[in-house]
Length: 258
Ligand SMILES: O=C(O)CCC(=O)C(=O)O
Image (cartoon, rainbow, N blue to C red; front, side):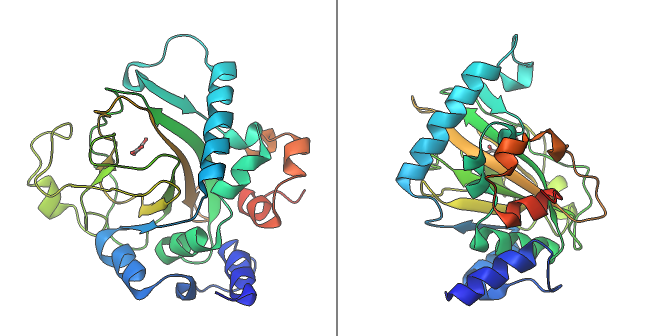
């Protein structure tokens, strides 16, 4: 990839220039996966050292922030909201040219950062029902998620299950679903190496699985929405001192001028 392509990819993904997605940053197979499966795994985005740094920082945020008992559906799950309030190191879980190109392949060139949170499923926890079953299927999509794998996602450690193709149509999947909590005949558990990013349409039926190992499974989740959707996070809550360290692309995606 040339420097020019990188620069163009970032500026465009932030909505600053053209209206076109940037397939040049994705292979034909990755684009096929976006279109047909509703998700794509992008390998080699974060180094081991960066995964270690993000994991340690997030554990520290959790120690400082947790208040009271967790909600029932968050038992055994460390969940931290609005990570950019705490540190500019989370900029790298927003501003990656290939990840933003995949988001653009789902949403088009105009999108914004909706939220950035962490999710750590501890041993024996993390199971979620398949969701969001009520959401409209088919293009145009209004939301996409990027899951930054700070640990390897394996078949046993609570990786995300998806119903490939369910971003396009409900019918074949809901008719074969007995219980959203139970395994689905069409489900695929997405395995992904440490440091990779799973980008998926939020119109894809998906959910976390139970971590059946003795080690935590950590991830950062950033979500992006098209401009007509209200952004969930009030980005003015991010302290000025953190904002000053963010990349221009991330600040544009947050809708902040400074
Ligand atoms: O962490 C995962 O594997 C999926 C999380 C998810 O889908 C959610 O929290 O809505």
